[in-house]
Amino acid sequence: MAVRPCSIHALLIRACFALPAVSPAADQPGWGERFSRNMVSSETGLAATFDPATGENIAWVAPLGTTCYAVPVVAGGRVLIGTNNGRPRDPRHQGDRSILYCLNEIDGSLRWQLVIPKVEGDRYQDWPGVGICSPPTIEGDRAYVLTSRGEVVCLDLDGLADGNDGPFTDEGALMAPEGAAPIAPQPPDADIIWRFDMLADAGCHRHDSAHASILIRGRHLYMNTCNGVDNTHKVIRFPDAPSLVVLDKETGRMIARDAEGIGPRTVHGTWSSPSWGEVDGRALLFFGGPDGVCYAFEPLPDDARPGDAPMILKRVWRFDCDPDAPKETNPHIYMGNRNEGPSLISGMPVFHGGRVYVASGGDIWWGRRVARLQCIDAAGEGDITRSGHMWTAPLNRHCCTTPAIHAGFVYIADSGDTLHCLDARTGESVWTHDTGGETYASAMVADGKVYTGTRRGDFWVLAAGREKRVLGHAKLDAAYSGMAIANRALYVATMKTLYAVRAGAR
Image (tube, rainbow, N blue to C red):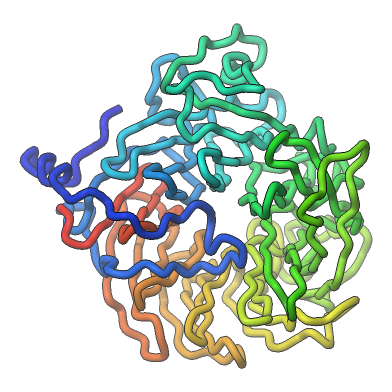
């Protein structure tokens, strides 16, 4: 399927390709800032408005599938984004599949795609029609991503165009549905370097869909496992499975895991990815637990290698984001209770200025309608639920997003149709904006602007800072999925389209 031009006038095709080449600036190779996970970019010269109907400030438009719950990442002249196979790009792959596109940054054309068949027999492990939801993390000529089947794969950023690099060489079998003959790999296919199966290799049972953003430090990959309830929503099938693991990026073998016993307390699924920070010269790994507890762990030594058995991550502190919630051993007795029940963390904890900012609350689909943003002093040890508490600010209904902290303010969008601006020091509300719809994707801050979008397809741009000012509004073609900011451009994803937005483009 060809890239669609940014307006109905064919002459504008030449305008799109006549734009100057993207100048070397800042890639966005992962979700948020590389380690802290802060949803802030240093890019400048960004557009405050764009119009999908006329092509104003739109450099190119690339079709996705028919659903997209992933955010794009940008590095090395490529844009990577997960989607489904609702609009197949390759006639060899028909039907329900999970897809990762690798597109050219300059024009949105396809370089290669990773094709993953759906899990057969249990829709609650790999929900039909939902593609790859996880954003890749790119480092050098490698991309690391969690597929919808719960497999971590290391990919060659050039795909198979430069040959099959191995050691994994069974791409043909992996692309084929269960019971089908292997599909002969071709240059438009992904080149898998290695593969790690969360179910087979770590004993984790994912629920609905797998989602993780891998954090890379040295040769170590830190990530959540997606372990969760089964199809009854009342049983954790593998309660002893880890919630947080560390893989060796060279081999894909597991090096370490947590031993906090979070499994039985998991409210729904383990979907919050870890972040990193340094407190008084001490490196810490922060993790938002599916039990509503924010944890800090000691990271592995730089020279740690895989051994006969996984090492255990040492916990430094724990902060219960909802200490007054019911603490029964089985939290699933509250499934469907909108008034009472436990909390969980879905968005990522963000480290900034010696503090951790994290949103928590009732499960968005099954839990009570309570959400909050909290600020934690990251310098403590042990149980710091009381001693580490800096402030708590109420949010509306539910929240599954990650905050952005910039210039003394915190910005976060919730599922109660509200974008919040708060004082980062005190948590006091500075202003709110009615977005007209619930938000699943995290707000981003760059170039003095706050960008956010809704499930109704409204995309908002507001001025960052104490004074509330709406700078722009666009109506998208479908529900907003998320965005990346790189090389003086916005990469705005909807459920079916990726827009490259650059000031002055048509």
